[in-house]
Length: 115
Image 1 (cartoon, rainbow, N blue to C red):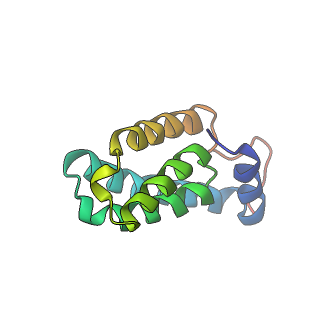
Image 2 (cartoon, rainbow, N blue to C red):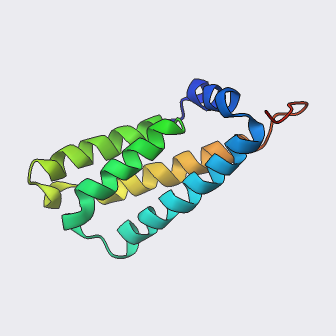
């Protein structure tokens, strides 16, 4: 579900303080798109929304969520946005988000210094 190696690579690349900011921005932006998909899904926006979500997901190691977004994006870009099932994508995001936060991935590692 989560590519923990990617999470640690990103944290090492940008430092703990910046990593926390990236996580906060990621959650804020992705939560907003996911909320819109839940409340007011618009198949004409699926290709763009899922492309954005895919890139964001893979950047932060949300591997399963990114793969589902990619599959939905492909359907939408092939002219089949009505065949995209948004509910499993949302469910995967919520589960991935919970797992990520439960494991304290957003918090700096004990003893780590900000780079």
